[in-house]
Image (cartoon, rainbow over all chains, first blue to last red; front, side, top):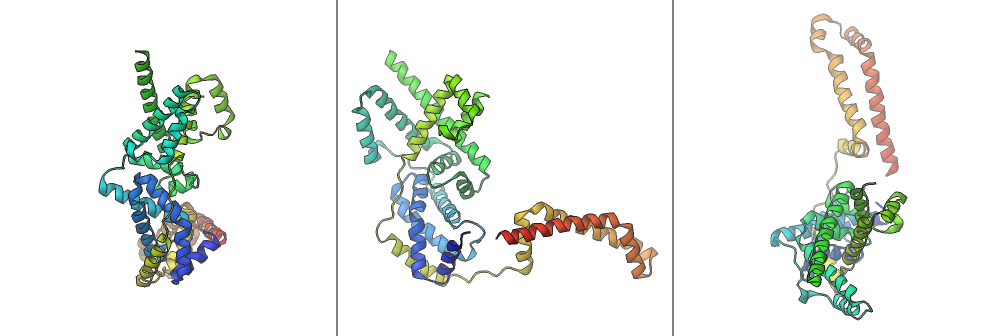
Length: 196
Length: 161
């Protein structure tokens, strides 16, 4: 653990309010992002992020200083998200109505591009990925969405999911392969329809 | 190179500049793998487009205050026993030498003590001990060697902290 992290942990444990705020401020964005990616539901991110930080504060006295603070916090966020998923039994599959403004912007830009046929294919691929992500086994889906976060490397994600890096890479490969096969299938179906 | 191996590599490191030369060479010759690469890139792009979360205003203050309340209720840091404090770094750094050391210790002690022989044939305690020591010199040297590896691992681990 870095010296600054150790100092932060010690200050938090001594009840320093500023240190507590710094801890929440430093990690809230990533904690929320991890939870959002894991659950696919933006409505519960704030509550689950708060729950994560409360667990962090409760367990801070037992934090093993040989590990990285960030990995430890993200592991707790992952645990909180998984607990929520087990309780609600499903990953929230975004309906087209939930499509974010940026998605719609992108689709509009695609369709106005010089090659609308190709743009339509891209939009379909995006839709297939969005739909199929919800169908993937939990371990594959989490491996895919976590490793797609820029700030998280394979080592950190493996630590969060409590699996070896090799296993994580296998999950990523299998998850992407399933998505690739489904996209190929969808595109073949589309070209058959176009030919008819 | 087999297509399956190439596609596994593509799924894990889709960026072209990260790929080994033999994978890039395979891609030039194999249209199926090129198509897979395009799809993996599309999948990566879509996954990376998922938005990041921004904490709403007041979140940090509210959560840190709740955290402070919890900290005041939480028990103090649990003290570790001396045994755990000494053994844990060595075990986590290099468990094999430590385990071997423990096994060798147990084995040597069993051989050394040889309770039955001891009780039956050697009434003199010091003579019994020195005879046993000589008879088991090889095992003892093994034990000492393994123990020293374990100890070295422990010291190294302490130094790296």
